[in-house]
Structure formats: structure tokens, C-alpha cells
Image (cartoon, rainbow over all chains, first blue to last red; front, side, top):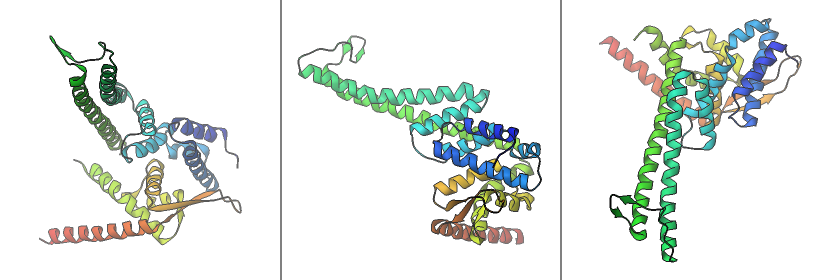
Length: 187
Length: 110
């Protein structure tokens, strides 16, 4: 069934804003909105009335992204890309704060993983008879040797990872807060 | 706090209960459920609330869906129905709902 140009454009916009979701899910969402458009056309609504009823395509897409971000748990790349897409739609507040908290979260967690790996590499190199002065732990005149460095690197790694994890939680909490604030404004 | 805030909080908490109750009666599609809810101002919700909510209930296994392709001039419709898990969930919610009403009645009665 063919739709008017304005309605097709509406669906294309929604589809574009839903980019971070898997294709099958996007297709299904757009098909369902299209089905409602046909339903409304059948009831004698004009395309303008339909677009007004459905509201801003950006807001509609954001509602789907919002639901899939805040209601799923844990960390995964799909969720991360959904978050990035969400705050790019979320306006200035999101542009300033969320990128900082989310990027720091990933950087901290990443560093937390790399740290103990560096510790293991230094120890292996030491056991094989190499010295790796560019990996190490130094405070003032004290410099940890390869054997002491391993537990230190693991400890620092855990601390960094926890800090990243907390920032990640903060990011999610901020998004929930923002969407709650938005809903209050809509009433 | 104003009354509209309070009403929207109530709405947020009860919509998924209402959706499960509607689907318990018979399978339905999004637009039909939205129009049913529109009859009750306290429950009226826009597409951008109901569709994402349906998607979540679907993902969590409380409801299932199937596309019914267009027949006799009707557009294709995505029909939802409640699953076994959804029935359990809705009867647990019904129970809590009764507790709430009873508690409010008692408190009101002093």
C-alpha cells in the first residue's frame, strides 16, 4: 500500500533516528507505525492530522531508544550506540554532560583492563631477561620492580574499572532523569 | 507537586497493567488499544508511550505478537496477545491493585 509523500518522509525520518537498533527491529517499528497511518487514513484522517497526532518523528524515535536503553541492563556495544544516539537527540544538556561521563566511563574501564595486562607483560619480559622501563610504577624515587609491579597494576586496574563502572551507572541515571524531566514538560 | 504530575505518575505505573488486562480479553493491535485508552482521560497515552511499552513487554516475554497481513482492504496489523508469563504477571498485579484500593478505602474511612 502506498502512502502520501509527507507520510513516507515521516517514516524515513523515524527510521534514520532509529539507526542504533538492529535492522529487523527498525523495519518492524516502522511497519507498525505505517500500519497505524493506514488505519487512520481509512478512518478519514488527513496526512497532516496523522503527522500531528504522531508528533515529532525525532521524539517518537527517541521514545523507542529511551525504552531500549533504560530498561535493559549491563554494558554492551549496542546499548552504548543507543545511548550515543539518544543524547545526540537530547539537546544541549546531553551534549555537554553525557559525552563526558560516558566517554570517561569507557576510558576508565578500558584502562582498568589494560593495566593488569601491562603488569603481566612486564613480568613475562622480566622473566625472559628483558627490562621494560616504559612500563612501570614510579612515585618519587621509588620504582616498583617487575614482580611488585604486577599486584600494583592489578589493584590500579580494579580501581580504574570500578570508577568507570560507576560513571557508566551515572550516565544511565542521568538519561533516566532527563527523560523523566522531558515527560513532565510534556504534560 | 501539582495534580497533573501526580496523574502522569499514576498513568505511568498503570499503563502496562491496563495493556495486559486488555490483551487478556482478546488479542489486539496498537492503534486499537490506544483508542480504547483514549476513552479514559486518566489513561490516555500517545503512540510514543504505548508502542515502546509494547516492545518492552514483548522483549520481556509478557506478550507475543504476530503480523496479520492485509485482508479485505484492511491494513496489515501487528496483533499482540498475552503469554502465560504475562497472565501470571497480570494476576500478581491485580492482587497488588486490590491491596492498594483496600488500603486507600481503609485510610479514607479512618
